[in-house]
Image (cartoon, rainbow, N blue to C red; front, side):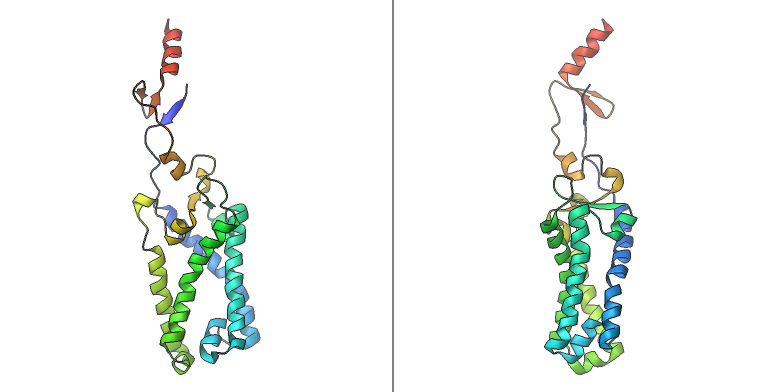
Length: 221
């Protein structure tokens, strides 16, 4: 007997709690090289060093940290479907067909997330002066305010109707699923499964096709 789902899977909003936790773990791990670079250049952070000095030499450490951040997120998600944080939280990044997204989609996804940080730093660079940025308390507060506004733009698309997808999900064509959903159909696939109508009967949450109904009738005889 072949059974078909009578309704698409409903997105689970609790998944976002795990996404925030996974993001915290990944951000912590991806900033460990920042601590090493900052200690070498003798600054609080590579971005703070660049915003104060505003020279090409000070921009190089910031560029290195940007590339490290991009590679940390894109490579494991593209090849294995999860970064360290997502793996620990039981999450997995999938492409349109429910498998690992691949490196191109993973790099696009990571770059969209990274663009919020880059945009915040660039706004700080053009709006503030080196002197105001050099003030450790006021400069850091201004940088974080710009970054916060850019992050809000990234997550502003979250809706139940689109599976709670953020901007990086929509642009890269990926979704974040729980590991429990790995062996089943993804929410995108479930919504497009063919559902027979006309010659079907409902049995609880399932629809029974004509062929299965004939076999059941033969067993009764």
